Length: 448
Ligand code: SF4
Ligand code: SF4
Image (cartoon, rainbow, N blue to C red):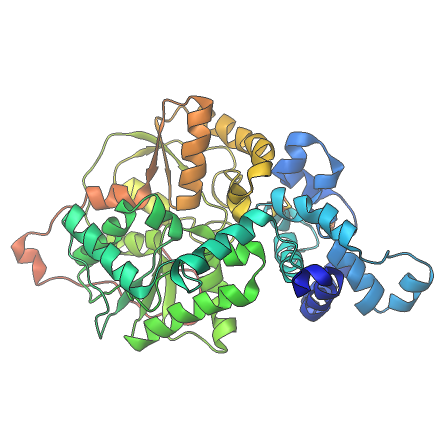
């Protein structure tokens, strides 16, 4: 029996108490129980079950705060107002903290007290992970990655290098790998590696077209988020730091995050905290890089005739700030965009965010969550659904198949790569790659 199994409550308590700083304390003290967050959450809306009220999901963290940390801890204990944490209680809460929260942050957006409930769910997951109580599906994926490569990355540097060369050959695109100097460093998501390798070729094709020195780095490439969504903060930090170090090693000015939601917010908002100071490069999502190069005239694309809708990944738009960029791209392509109700920052999750797609037993709940998206997509009458997150793409692919859709789900990145207009020879001397160092990691301004 592992230590975590031997004393899960002590481990969860230690993690919760360690994580509760002034921000979390203020959030937990501020809730006025208005219930507005319930109406923002797809699990509550689709089931009407009060257990799925967002603020209720973090009850274990709240109880530890009131009993052990808060200003009235003595009274809470004395009058039994905050029950003691038990393994049974934590186990019972597993489906609320993992299965029924995709960390979409819709509740955080609507809360009148500004409480970031999605962030509190992440902290609660951290305690659960430390206690060894993350769902077995998450632990299985993490162990598989570790086992496959002897590292938390799932692929060794050599395997990644071979993969890039294979993709380069297959798609006929020049791959730059481990260049000593690179202004732009792209990363990849594990879903792309397994399911959508064409998106790695698309990134390379677009970066070759932009014309600035760029390079994949085999010592920091994996824009992974399973550790983050499982609650394994230390594991996530190892991955984040490897990317930061690799980008610094080649003097990168721009780190490009792939079509992946959670890895983007992690790198854009958290990496500097893990690194301990401001990052010496900016962090952009691939749609932001494309949009700024379209706006400057450095990327030109064919006009295509399509009726399409765009699914905003929660972590890219609401949580990440990359809401305008995909619309700049779709407009440049001449796509007729049929926006879904609540499109943009108020979008609904595809149903598979926050790692919930990994949890097998959560499929019925996931289907209920997906039903909102399905209804919204169908109401647009669009033939194609574009997205810029491989996780969302996978969920929409699966959900669409079960729903018997006659619609195509596509990657916006791949659409651009397929429609680049090659430069005339006379244009080549005019290349002005858009590499604009930005202070900190503020969201990129893009043309409206
Ligand atoms: S919306 Fe905010 S204040 Fe209202 S119940 Fe939810 S967390 Fe509490
Ligand atoms: S983050 Fe999203 S899924 Fe989780 S509780 Fe809030 S609204 Fe519900």
